[in-house]
Length: 330
Image (cartoon, rainbow, N blue to C red; front, side):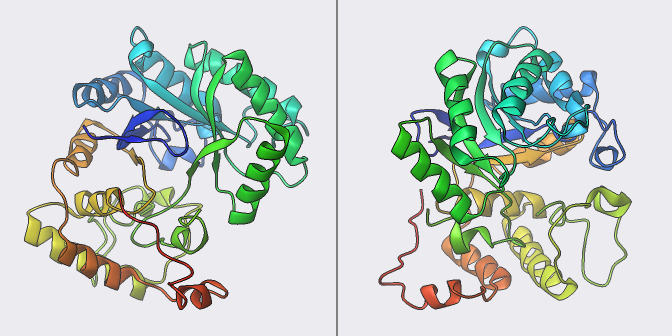
């Protein structure tokens, strides 16, 4: 298993981590994503560990905390060999006015609750799951800095922030000597490359191979409603990318998901790809994205098929590449 530096930190992480959003399925939203319970989750964790994939990602917002509980049970007795990341911002269980957001009140209580559900005394990486414009940035970062100083949290990260949200937070940390976000977690795939426009310089289930041009949508998470919350993608764009993926997959003797994950692993600034799986078989297939690499011609083919004209001012900046150079690969 290849390891990479986690953003601006000294921590090394495997290039793949297991996302536990499919664990639980205890409410109407997440039941479409997956309903993996402790026995299956434990077997998937076993499989990950056997392949050197000891990084696990969850959130207190996944199935109202059930995802954290199941992950904690699956890791029982081997927590010391694992890295855990979790997130907070959205309400979990209680629906009071202070049971969400990035206030000191919520962050402090949410972290304590996550520690209890996970059955651990520390969280290796703690994300703000979304930006909270109602809470002063320095209040959020001071609360997070306290968690880091106390040893309850190792590193902090940002998820689903815009570029200016992120830069405002980093500037506040630098000005006040507070813990800073060392890594960004966001949506990025061959059919969702907007991350490259603003965030890189600092799939969402559609690339599983089940969706093909001129064929009915096969049963799966998307077909059964599990795509709720996914970014919109036009059929023409989706099928253009899927056509290119299928051609490359055929040439390499790989599956469409394996090619899509391998493409991500070769993108600039990507330290880790969080992969989801409902069961052991899906986990094994995703692990097949490792141990080989797409060649330049195949990458160019996928890049061309998935390229979109960005909105202003990004298209303008891309015309001046001498002054706005692209990030380099790993």
